[in-house]
Image (cartoon, rainbow, N blue to C red):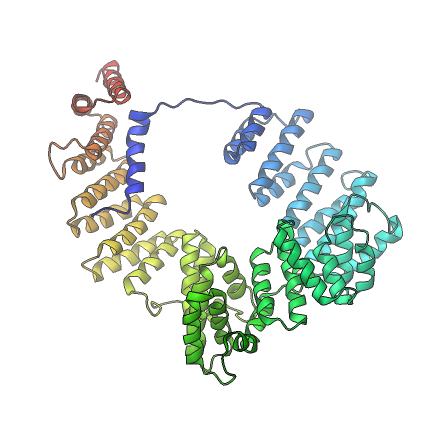
Length: 596
């Protein structure tokens, strides 16, 4: 049987021979800011952060420290470590000169806003504006006041944002810093839109200088009826088709959806809302401006029957069974119509079985779309239609659990699993328990995960090759979190239930790995040698060589140098590769130098 763990096996071989046989490590010292910045620019962000944290000059060296600190915060931002960025600033802001502290606080404000946490941003901005770290210069003062307004938007305090904007304009003038500052007057326009002052929003947006109208300008024009609805639809389609505004594609799709809905184009509206929700970022007030809401898409799905009936030639009195048949036919012709039929039935099916089955079919079809998992999370985890995971259709809930496990999203997987006690329809009890075990292990509940596997091994005597592969993956999870004492007897149980020689050799190797991690070196050597010789006591295939080499390393650590030397010499006799021979000779010499 060809193991699906061949990739893992190759990595094991590389681990065994890589340190000892194939490679020699070359330490690289990166102690200058220029070198670290270059590493980050080359994509090695984690390494750059680690080296920067190691070599950054002391805080007393103001000029050098600030230069390094700027790069540190830049790297935290680029890697999404916003909590770490905020914690770092909180720990250092009172230890440095006020002018540097003010700059740091503004970086922390941006980090809070990037996380969607308006309250944290407002707290720091209050600290800045009230000059706890000295007076802000005029530029930073204006910037802080503008960010304060944005923070209010993040908290959905639209009326307070309007008051703060009017105060700002009274103090600094309506025209302040328009030129080259598109974001600021976009924020102002959003404040007006969210307070239903479309004329003032439209007046501000007339100052745009970009070659194409912004999505906000098109939205306000649509709602004020200052542009024909068909024209707005065409303009959105033109911009989206050109690919000219990828960062704002979600918002153009949102405007497109609103225009399509106004024209009664239900299919286009639903498609546009799907695109918009899939691409949407993490700015909550933007959802309010554009009326972007997963429940709006569910409502659009519910209203699709007339459009689908017209396009597909279905009668008004068509029953659910006929719609399911139509969806199956469209799966081969036009998958979007198929998905839309399932979505419509999920909302309007005659009974709960129809609705649950339609949800499951819709979710499975949507998951096959690019970024389809993002759309499903929006529709099933953020919609008011499903206020709690217990309200989710069973088939969809289990699909989301599988995706969360695949993405190693432990909090989501745990939340979705909570309260579930039996396998869903169509899922075997074995697969269900393996899924439970993985979620427990991912959530740090290692004992519960182990108990699930122990119970499974008591209940099931025989595993198919595919089932065994899935079981082994859970054992690897336990091994990865350091549960070596627990995982060894589980490996041994699986070993005793498989007759495949190569799989048995692999299991012995992995048991040896766990023995090594427990510093039980003589037992590790024993299992590596069993892995090498299980098929043939004199075997010297690549697997056997790898396992023998690891055994020799363990024997050395166990204080049995003569046994280790004997294995190295045996390997030297059968190995023709020059680099491997060189490594073996070095290991033998090292044993001699140490009097072993």
